[in-house]
Length: 242
Image 1 (spheres, rainbow, N blue to C red):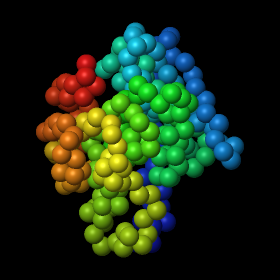
Image 2: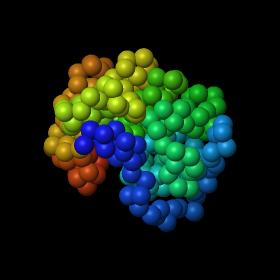
Image 3: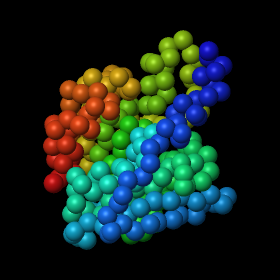
Image 4: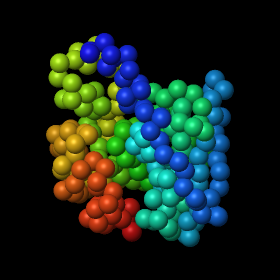
């Protein structure tokens, strides 16, 4: 079993086959493309908001989210803002192979594409995307980072879920928001699901305890059920300062 977990960890963390179809997007949507070193290309969308003076919302989704569905969701939450979301590397139509290191590097490249002056960006990360957004907040001077159902360390999540496995020897996809956000000057907002059945609540609480400066909202909901909870919508709007 340990051998199977090690061999298939990339497929378990990045289940590309589970991603749903893209929704219909508003007419204001602009298609984006970002070439990467090595020949791979990232594809994304920018849904224009009603107020170009507002910060751009750059979003990073869960491991089975369609990026365009996430962009539409945030556009509906914050219609005044431009919303940008790219399909992760290896998630069609983006090409390549996903990995933690690739996704984090791509986040910086996407930021530099849409905000070359380095100002006015709110990074929003959901689930595994919280690791990506936290990395960006450490590498670039963004205005705010909002993490939904986050974790302190992806390796720590793996250790708690698989206590019988030598995670330290086998795990290849570490993301560490706790270390990343310790280096960030961004305004930090965390939205935790206290009944999370995917990311152990202890891992989210460990992140919260490490960041006394963060604004924290706790929602009595599960990892996926949280998106239908009206308290979550209110907390997300508050985190986006809407």
